[in-house]
Amino acid sequence: MTIKTSLLAGIAALAVAGPAAAQVSNNAVKIGILNDQSGVYADYGGKWSVEAAKMAVEEFGGTVLGAPIEIVSADHQNKPDIASNVARQWFDQDGVDAIMELTTSSVALAVQNLASEKKKVTMTSGAATSDLTGKACTPYGFHWAFDTRALAVGTGGSLVETGGDTWFFLTADYAFGYALEQDTARYVQQKGGKVVGQVRHPLAASDFSSFLLQAQASKAKIIGLANAGADTNNSIKQAAEFGIVQGGQRLAALLFTLSEVHGLGLQAAQGLVLTEGFYWDMDDGSRTFSKKFMERTGRMPNMIQAGTYSSVLQYLKAVKAAGTDATEPVAKLLHEMPVDDVFAKGGKVLANGRMVHDMYLFEVKKPAESKAPWDYYRQLATIKGDQAFPTAKDSGCPLTQ
Image (cartoon, rainbow, N blue to C red):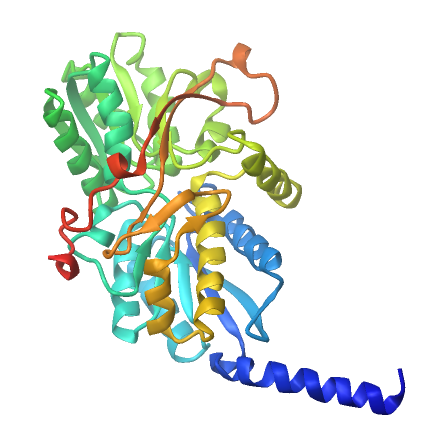
């Protein structure tokens, strides 16, 4: 190629890239992953979700509309005020276009509300409260991986149907715990079960003995653990010390993921029934994705990490299809575009921002049943998306009334 030909080719490339890049604010598409990276939920999402987001960017090709895609991240320490300050700086000063993951319901609610004021997109995969697409819904807020209602339908419903008709809740004392207890209690009662009591514990508690003794004294057939992460692990470990399961009561881990099973170990976790939206060994697509994730992180992904990958990928698809990273057209397409990737097949986004996809009921294998590392689950049932999640009209979202 001559110098003249090379120059002409370069000018032509700039002519093609120029108009596209001009539709991208600050000459880059920036996505923030905001979650707990050092506390009780660090394994549940944490730095592993950041890696999942980076995988989505790499798969997409690293650029969109001729502009680079950047991932930034921060640890919100499970504090809504810290999270809001980070989000405000990201939006106002750092040119962040969308914030994702958002572990911890109180954080997700605060950041989603702020993002609505700033007219920015949030896509939550780490927080559970169904209020995000219910009474607290916004035009730019999306809830991706799961929510408290889906967990209630899966784990709560299955246990009542198999005889677990009396419940006592051990609940994390903040928005997520309340929502998970409320949604599960409602579903238990709809199925003919009864709630005989509840007790609330602080986030990241170290001693669950007094709470577990109250649960044991209730004589409830099911002790519903409306908590997550290390809190659930510690509840299960300390319940064993009191012989609660040996005494005939059953523990229901209402939000328990592959990460927590791995941390707890099969000896302690065996027999637990749980609901997730993803498992690494479901099909060829999930195995291929998870193998790549394992090579990067040394662990298999759970539904939060796979959900983060999916949300980042879908956001980038919407930016490309919109021809801009401006919030209004991107949010419109996020509501309209089908979701089809390793996390969700045939997923759809409702008017309230809820991404509807199938959920799965699993039982944790006994140690002798596990044939390889991370071979932890036996699938009991598929919960179709329309069963797991309410319609937009029934969600309580004021935008859909």
